[in-house]
Amino acid sequence: MVSEAVQSLLDEVNRVMIGKPETVRLTVTTLIAQGHLLIQDVPGTGKTLLGITLAHAIAADFKRIQFTNDLLPSDILGTSVFNPKTGIFDFRPGPIFSNIVLTDEINRSTPKTQSALLETMNDLRVSLDGVTRPLPQPFMVIATQNPIEYHGTYPLPEAQLDRFLMCVKIGYPGAEDEKRILQEKKLYLEANSVKPVMSVEGMLALQKSVDHVRMEEAIYRYIVDIAAKSRSSLQIKLGLSPRGAIALCRAAQAHALVLGRDYCEPDDVKTVAVPVMAHRLVMASSAYGLARVEESENAVEELLRETPVP
Image 1 (cartoon, rainbow, N blue to C red):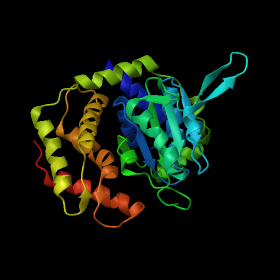
Image 2 (image 1 turned 90 degrees about the vertical axis):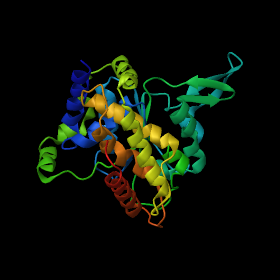
Image 3 (image 1 turned 120 degrees about the vertical axis):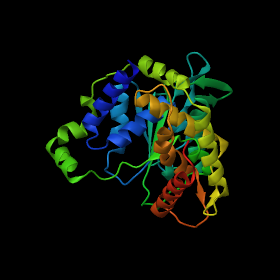
């Protein structure tokens, strides 16, 4: 029953996100694992479309926030406004109070504004004026950034990057897929055509199911060995943190669930290792932009080759 529900969700999102089944699978895996997603790619590849499509497919609330250098934390979290009729301050929630929130070009806002997301992504709540308010469930931040254009941007600090369960690239479509997009451009451009195939309650039940995906002792040891190698590698300045190892473990469990299994295999760990680990590593070289991304991904792939598979 779980596998049928997940497959229906994948099929519906893939109907709009033409030719990107792997990206869609990793995005759904991130949502089921109760994580957040960072998409690093050039404009026009469907980053916003992916977020809208996923939200419609699970009948969830969706908000999009365009990050700019004059964006304030209150523009995201909300603010208290004095009500002259009652004589008290009324809280007006910001767009963060949604199930799926797309933060477009997140690195264009100041560090102060970026930090407004830390509590929401880590604790799923907002604290303002001495009051803590829970966010709706499920809750997922999908952030985008352009790895090419860096004029007027503020690089995400390591603490912020560590809050994202996965970092993925959508990439350009293949020739046949791009021809389909041109032929079915109305479908590709209109995420409103997506039909809900799962309820919010159904997604919450799926998220709880992740905890019951069986992990053998050997799989835990495999993850620990990968993390340890990342910390001793000469080409990596800062290896995988314990939080990163926990993220790798949960992502592997969620990936197994997406594939219809109630147990985790080494291949699940290997499949999610690059999107979970690469953005968390600090490389010893001074590479920047796309070069840094590629170097981190290559380093993770080398770690996987060097670590014995149970």
